Length: 615
Image 1 (cartoon, rainbow, N blue to C red):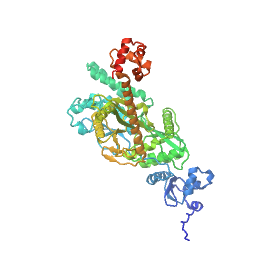
Image 2: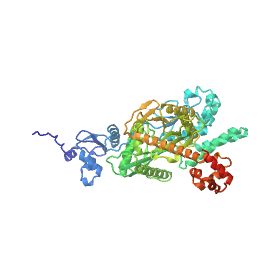
Image 3: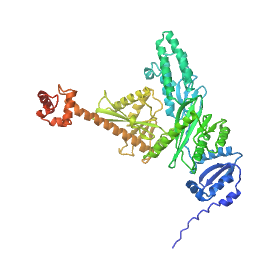
Image 4: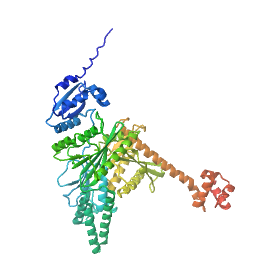
């Protein structure tokens, strides 16, 4: 008989002895389990008082805190001179160690900016991330790429500035499609002088700086001067710019002054938190974004918001800070956070929660958005947000994509080709934005030409402002379809859209798809949430295309035979189909039965009968 040796159980943490030794100074504490793994990192103005609160009667502790305390094997403390220094150290340790009982916020990498390459003869309008360069003007930051694209689209349509790369600009010999759809003045081929183009740049800068009122006055003066000189086309262009600016002003009912403010609202429910930020720069809302931090041992709204604010503002290297942060809740540590921010960045940022006037209206908007986005996340049976996060990691994107589009082609032996476009956002299928395209004028069965026509028709409309560009575009097909899609986007001047091809694998079974990126193939596990999202949108585009093709085919079968009979127009066809219920019943009808239909004479009944039964 053999006996098995078992490892001795770890000794329980001696809280009384530990608390007898701990200091009352400010500092940071790190809690570890028996395996030496970090559990939680916290900061305190008085370490002894804060740590004592964990080891009171368990009945007074929240469930997560009780779970944390039962796992503690030892605690390490680091003493700091001030509570602000403790807060900075706490956030650095959270970022490095990512403890499971702390609130964790996904890194945002860098925020996007609108830029003008001011050193060029004809400056380029574009989007920028990362380190700022000399000789370039930056406006922002914007909360996400979608907000930047919206502003870029407005600027390009209103002031007609170039967005093409210098390599394209320097080698043009004739205007591109952007000029043809009136979104660029074609400085590449000399259709506008440098002086006039610089004026357009200055007007765009005034808009980005929130000086829309002054800009409208200046454009009105220019319009009157152009009219007086009988330059009516130029006057009309100024008129259109004024109209566009006034439309934006009408939409931006929340403009007020020249404030730089972040509005932060928190909503919590069912163990999930949503923090919604509205970004106000120069008195104008640039956009907003929702965050879903992973909750830790913190329970109250104030504690959760405190943890979020620390990670969001203290871990954002190179972040542009607002002057004021407006909050839905008031954590006790706001003065400490403000002091820590001043130490780290040299910026004086005020955190306030006592609101009135315009700031109260902004907060109401943020709270409503946080509430709705939290409900959408809770209602998501497919856990779409997790799938989008997995797709972000798979494609190595700087932020979670907010809009996906997928195209597919359906036909019967090359006839009656239909292309589908389906749209997903972070809440799932966005069916109101689905579109179908009846493909005409191509060789039957040429899926490449069909895809090209569908993409061209779709994105030419989007370039004209009739919708939103996606963050990721998927095409159902292999490398050839992917290359054709890239050619179309380049020709239309569509930038900032990530392309992916979804090809059926060798077994043509779900889970074995080949994912094609522009730089090569990417492998993904069959149980990956990202692959499940790709399969979902691909299958939905396939279903939508087949449904459209069947509808088109059935419509032809119902009407085409009758349309070929002389004397049978739309009204008589409608009466026949209404009387018999369908083409098949019309085929079965006798001459006498056909003659009973309104508008159908005996002679017409005979003609219809012969035409339908000629075989």
